[in-house]
Image (tube, rainbow, N blue to C red; front, side, top):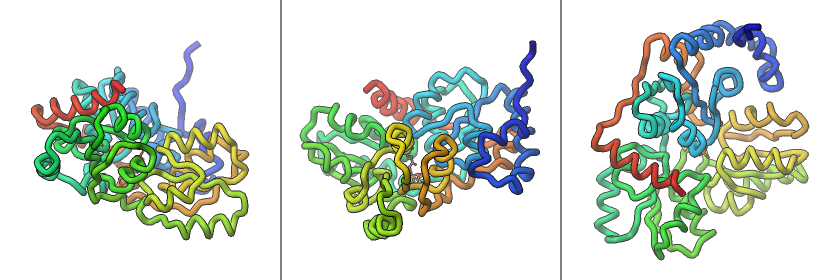
Length: 324
Ligand code: 13P
Ligand code: SF4
């Protein structure tokens, strides 16, 4: 018996906890069109944990944190990868699966961390600290990755830093991630001054107010938050690690000190957990919409390309990370 492909109507159940019924009809036409386009174009959608729930739960074939998206992009068999996330994630997918057409629905979906450093900044750091290995966060351009020894994500940063066996490491460009890792290792870490514009806005006072207003609340923070925020949280980890924490510990009430869609996406899976929701929107992640995913597949845009010389060197830095 042939199994009929999903339609928007059959998908609403997945998101009814976070999308009110009155809003759903506005999504239906685009969702049905995108589902049909995915079949026509032999395309898959990779969505980061910060994508809105109708993209994350109704359209994505692969979801996760930056590390999971990179790992899974490598083995995509489809002809086309649509990256519902920000530009560095699309570049990473292209680096790891160069034979595929990788589309980013809005090429302006950047990242304040990726904008915080250039390839020539990395060369200057190498001159200043000769022989010190350079660990670069994946939230950077391919050109910056190409100047680096190895990449890391928030999910594996400590393991990557310690894998090098070096007493000193340059860690670029997120100052707070670098400091949060420095607090967990004997390795001397030289940081840069980049910040995530979403996570830098959380403060320890926010956490204290939340604990007062919601006694017993469990506070999870992303390691891009300032160290004083991480110090006040119950747990800090990548977006995937926060989601796993909720699944494993099932706190009665939780707050995720991170981007807003994350709570929606995790709440869908855990109806028994109460999510308190002060959060900050990432304006870059929010540039990805149903409308521009549809246009990306209809018009085959915007194709991600990387200069071959840069790509070769950047790929090595990402592959070294994935080997650990
Ligand atoms: P994760 O790798 O934890 O998903 O983080 C990516 C990101 O952009 C966080 O702001
Ligand atoms: Fe970049 Fe921060 Fe947005 Fe993540 S949340 S994409 S680190 S600006």
